[in-house]
Length: 178
Image (cartoon, rainbow, N blue to C red):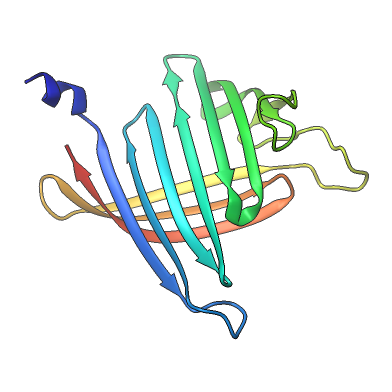
């Protein structure tokens, strides 16, 4: 069937997390996440309450990797006050990744202009503030366990420093292969 070939390799995923708030008195924190992905694209929306505040976090990207790596990405992480449109072009040789990255300068992601910098397994964007450590990084990992032929249980971890904000996350979820 045509639909089967279009959906081959596509993964639906969802997760839910609840935690005690870091500061009392506040209602319990939670995060609900849904998304769709495959090797070349990723779409994720999260609804979150942290310390009584509600946030929506979005991450969308598309990747082309055929000797040259090209990846446009949109991130709006309201919960961490980080928002950008980024285009990453890289080349990998013997496990070392290097290239050029352009990222929107402020929250007006299309009208503000872009800063362009050299990238290598991390970023070193130009500093606009004296004394600010400008090295940025993102590292993500995923471990999954096959429950059935089409269903997997997964654990995702993330650690990053972007636009001066440090962030880490670990969560458990379910993936369904179409």
